[in-house]
Amino acid sequence: MVYGFADFFGAIASRKLSSVLVTAVAGIVGFFFLLTMIPFFGATFSQEAVIAGIAAGFASAIGITALYASLAIGPISIISPLGAVLGAMVPLIFGFMIGDRFGPLGWVALLLILVAVVLVGFIPGADVRLPSAKGLVLAFIAGAGIGTILIVLKFSPSDSGLASVITMRVVSAVLLNILVLATWMNLRRKGIAKPKASMAGKYWWAVIAAGIFDSSANIFFTLALRSGSLSVVSVLTALYPLGTIILARLILKERIARIQMFGVLLALSGSAILAVA
Image (cartoon, rainbow, N blue to C red; front, top):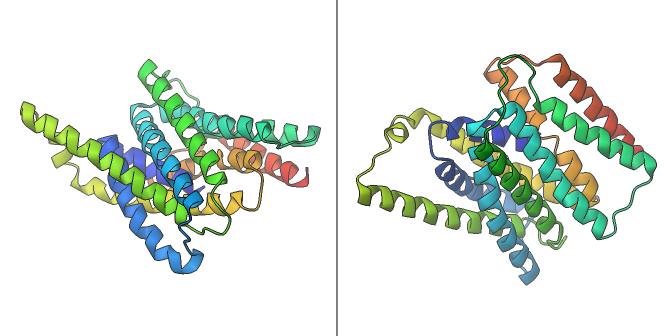
């Protein structure tokens, strides 16, 4: 759910600001938020935890930037569930390779949840347009990047607390801010201004919210991985479009279609079956 909250605010900010800038600043905000959480969850920076965090940081810089950029291009109704399914399939396949096994009932539950992800994120209607080739490519990159994050964090030591997540934030923020600086210097050298960025001051609150929610979701996901299998947790995490459509309903007053409600019920049913299986 909380990943969906972060995506909602990240997509809003990316419509007025560069997606790279949004991800970079959100990463910095998320880093300071994580520091305030250390007294509650601890942080032991062992070699294993730091290595996992560095790898996740590279994947995060690529995946989250591609995600926000793809959502900004739209249509969100197609791009969001596509990225979610891809982000689940990568660790699901990897989990199966490292030994995750399910009975027939478990596979039925996972299939129901993946179908629910698509239904929840899709908004039917005559005005629905197909995504562009650029949007699809970015969605695939986002899904692969997010899936890689989930895989890497699985291998962070169980007693490391938030060390891997904090390291991930530092690496991702450094990479993205270097890219932002390089882009700014290149534009300045060419004498090119971006007027929409100067007019987007009121959207910075969305960047801050995206950073806090994304870091919070990373905490929840890491805790979940330490008490469950990679395949199960990654598929359940793919339901994050629920958070996006809930905020879209509450803040933007968007209508929730019947097919989305059916997807919600299907997701709940699949989750219940998965718990029993």
